[in-house]
Length: 338
Image 1 (tube, rainbow, N blue to C red):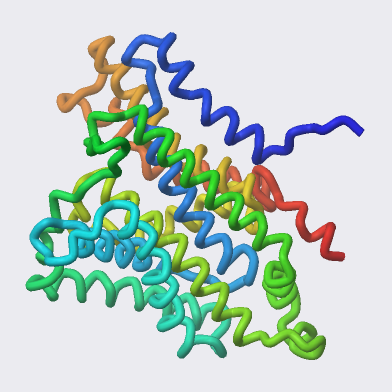
Image 2: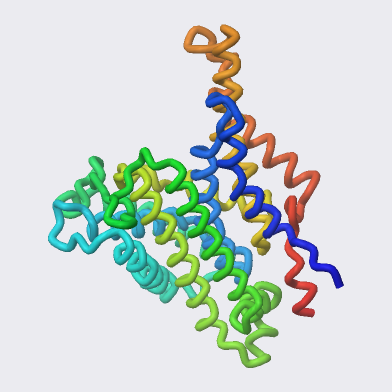
């Protein structure tokens, strides 16, 4: 039987070739820097997909775990704190820190479902923002923590100017997360997640420890989101202010998995490309092209595509849900479970 690459392989292989294609394009058409943002949101959405797509638990506060990862990374590496353990150890520590935060949220909410769980996770996201803003002796309040170090290879410290290095580092981290989530998806734990999403009562009667499985879903999703937060802070060399991790970030991650296909890895990757690429690539390039032709600009806000982005986002969501209710790439894992 001939091997045929699946959609995940095709999407990742195409992403790996973007910098090479950029070399042949004029600077105005290059998209490598924007694709880095796609990678970050794809990692975040993969975490959300574990708890919402696999386990069926609606989480509207995934951005809070991203914030926890970003600030944990900053406190462990920034020179104003006593730790300064370096990029790689700090990035790895964001994973257990995020998992612990997921455990603390999951423990009191295990028996909640549907709208009640969504409201609790939404409230958790708002609480994290307020804590980060008001605990300014540690978090620096709305100023954010900076500067933050990048990785070092061969004794050379990376800066934001090393665009190609950052691109492939983010790509490598995305591949690692995809492989980890893929293995979880096909594992006994992954099948238990799908089982409780379909019918919690039947799962319990079959001997699945539902509370334990839900807790692992919360912790896994939080760990991945915290990793995304840590790498995001390093790329920007700053945590930014806490409001950068607000409800809009959580909703954008949710939109990614809805548009791509809830419960599927390939769908998450494609959804991230569509939703983030629409904002960071299509609208930006369209605005620049119109400006070059003397159209738009500050003098005429109606002709600037950036001013229409939320309308375009909403329209894209309506069309996606109406025309492809299962997502652009609906998952196939359930076929192997039956």
